[in-house]
Amino acid sequence: MDLYSENDKQVIKIYNSLKQVIDPELDVNIIDLGLVYSVKFNEETGIVITMTLSSKGCPMGDIIMKNMEDVLTEDFPESKNTIDLVWEPKWTSDFISPKGKKELGR
Amino acid sequence: MLNANKNTNSSSTIVITHFLTSAIIFFLITVLLSLSSQAFIGHYFQPKILAITHLTTLGWVTLIIFGALYQLIPVIAGKELYSVKFSLITFICFVTGTLLLAFSFWYFIVGFLLQLAAILLFVGASLFVINIFLTIQKSMNDNIETDFILSAVYWLWLTVFIGMLLAFNLTHAFLPKDHLHYLKIHAHVGILGWLLLLIIGVSSKLIPMFLLSGKLDTKKMSFAYYFLHAGLVGFLVDSFFFNGISRVLIYLLLVIIGIAFYIAYLVQAYKKRVRKKLDIGLKHSFISFIFIAIPLTLIVLLNSNIIQDPKLSLQISIAFGFSVFFGFITLLILGQTFKTLPFIAWHKKYEKFSGKIKTPLPKDLYSEKLAYWQLIVFTIGYMTTITGILLSKVFIIQAGSCILVCAAIIYNINVFKVVLHKPQALNIK
Image (cartoon, rainbow over all chains, first blue to last red; front, top):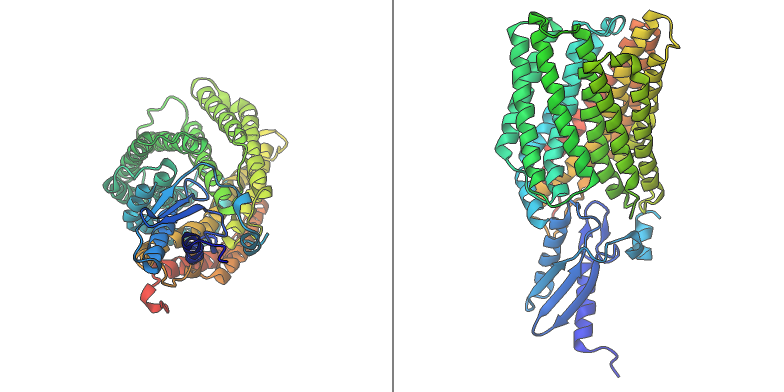
């Protein structure tokens, strides 16, 4: 029996795809940094990503978001994508994955 | 914020121009320093020291700060810079004014040329204040960093205004008290009001961001803000209307308490950091924060009547100025350049190569090895020069300043490496 629906599989693919996008200052991908809060997918709405940045003044914010759009457009050309930038909950270092922390030298 | 960043990118050429020009001026300063070592023994009010001091404060420190602010203010404020054209006029006025001023002081031509330089600087500073004020005013972001920066910008205006009065006073002598009295006020307002407040404001935003420090207690920064202002305003009012220079220790104490709160904030950021490994830019910064202890010790010594020898007192005065501008501010800038300039240049050069295209990282645009050598060579040069100043030994000052020339060359090579970086030369898949 397949545990995952087709949509779930697509969401996993999107997460993996977004791992290609790195924060140029930290050299760690945005998934391991915990910047992506949620990824939703269905046929009608397409890909909807809720994400944040490590700080409101992050000068690389626009580059990161542009990279996300480019990656999604290339890997999922049939789906439209929407990226919602949110500031709540506020990002903290607790959101970084163990792998991300290791890469940052913790 | 996304819009603000895009617009900030459009002004990156002017930002890079500021960084490049100030790097060249920094090299010029170290060369002039090595050519005028003798001037660092004796009274500080003399042509070569005045020329080097103004070249340092305006052409090196202020110019690079202007460049950095044009990039940072829109990020902090969440709004685009009010006017790129204003920033260009400010740049022209400042560079021309600074070079004319330094030339006038070096040859001590105190007439029209000096006054013209002062007017150009005043016009440039006024336009800068208007530009920053109108940018921040448009912002809804109300935070302590913005308060620091905005206050610093007003203090800059006052510093340049007093400087302009002094330039005219040298030939017309219209100020009621003696020239050195106002020179001290001019210097203190410039160092504390403009440079220190600005550095504190900018670094309190950038350092936690670079270290990934998470949530910090900003009350410490608010205390720092009020203590520093109490010291500065108290000193200024007392100096202008009474004879406050004799009560300077009280104001100095208030300023030191303010700095202590700021240092406590940085320590908190350091302890809470996720990024354990400090890169070379941050190593420069943290060493410069440790070096704050040197000018603070010197100024306490100067004002506490411990030093009875007037000759030594003069040397300590010069060493104080040197330790503020070189030991603290220059070292901080040398490091922060490689935390900011590569990002600005990278943003400009690689924005179009985004997505899946493999690009180098901003840190790949400069040589980390050279930056390490810069730190070592600069620290040796600084320590040697300040030792020479305190011991009144010309040959030690000469040796130290020659080492500083080497540090400036290393810095310039790295800055030009970043600016001249060509994306097409890289292996972009």
